[in-house]
Length: 262
Ligand SMILES: Cc1cc2nc3c(=O)[nH]c(=O)nc-3n(C[C@H](O)[C@H](O)[C@H](O)COP(=O)(O)OP(=O)(O)OC[C@H]3O[C@@H](n4cnc5c(N)ncnc54)[C@H](O)[C@@H]3O)c2cc1C
Ligand code: FES
Image (cartoon, rainbow, N blue to C red; front, side, top):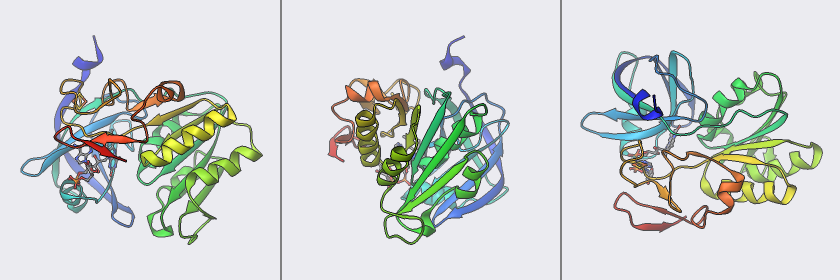
């Protein structure tokens, strides 16, 4: 059976709602669809929109962690226990859960995608760098401590931890420790410079990208980057694959296919 035929759609009941940080909410629901770290789902609120969201919790009691940035995410973050959403998926190629000494670097809601991968890495050790603009926007610091031997945080305004961005913090951590693999998820500019840093240090990496998505399942092409579909061949790409992408860190497309500079 191919991955495509394993995709399911279901109405699910929200049974828990947690405010994680400023404007960021985790919604949990029972859904037994098989999923792996780094995969995402399409979340439909009839009458509002359908949007892609990483799975921040796997297993039968799944979860998504949503930042309020616009109409659909405002509606999602306003949902309460007892409300329903319609989910389909899971979609995409997630992280290849690595061996050795791992550095996970998450910016913004990027930690939502990374944590399920970090929680699968049992036989090896993980260090984590979490970046945010301010202390109030830091996400999943306590949850990361359960899987990471060393959790460091950075804030752009210096309100907590390292004063600077997550890539500058990662650079400092790389100078103290030799890592076998870097996992990254966050704003694309951050990933662009993290990828560059990994290349300079000769460390293999995997990074999760975001593009505008309509079908989520490889059919419409709206999520294309350099001829690859982020929903199907990604969202997680290896450092080697990213090296060949001219649009990575430079441009994306809007909902009509128009090119936008990043
Ligand atoms: C694979 C993937 C995983 C994601 N995981 C998360 C997550 O875990 N948590 C989270 O908060 N956000 C996540 N996002 C981003 C989330 O999908 C957008 O923030 C959301 O769609 C914005 O919709 P809106 O109506 O609230 O805002 P709008 O005002 O419509 O848009 C705000 C921004 O989101 C982008 N966006 C809007 N619609 C889409 C769409 N259908 N597909 C992709 N981008 C869109 C716009 O281009 C714009 O840059 C993910 C995106 C992708 C592609
Ligand atoms: S969203 Fe349709 S092909 Fe990726």
